Image (cartoon, rainbow, N blue to C red; front, top):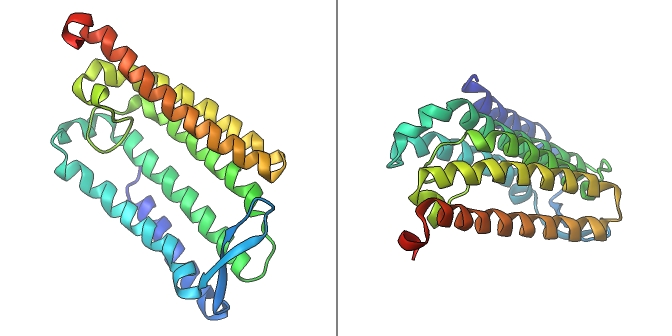
Length: 215
């Protein structure tokens, strides 16, 4: 995968903001309630530049992780998946940013419908790539048990990828329900996903290490 593409996505976000910034009102919407109504506002400076700045930070962080990770040698083993995860995250953030800019300009965008679809697709994409990740200290399912045993890491990421894909499908499908139910399903699904993968990592560790070594 071409490593310049994530940088291009950040540049697109910055250029889009520069183009529309003079046309933005002084106060822009930044939060919506469960009925899809705006319930919080901020200055156009903060509202329009937050996501591009976060995107730039994510890009720099992903470039720094392989340099400072004690297990840096493992990054070469899943370089394609690593770049893919970064690309998916930045694509999601760019799509969200462009949607918000359109809303700030007064063009109707159903944020409550778009958000679960975007989150769902992001989880599905990362779920596909997750099993390819090798043990490291920054990316993936990092529990005490996955970080202490490479076999536990492999098993947890294989199962975790499937759980994440299922969660993403459920969240994306919830976009067609009433906003209140969409919110509840998203929160419950993400919480359940986290509990399942953490619990499974401990279960796999107990199997791999054995009851005597595992205490």
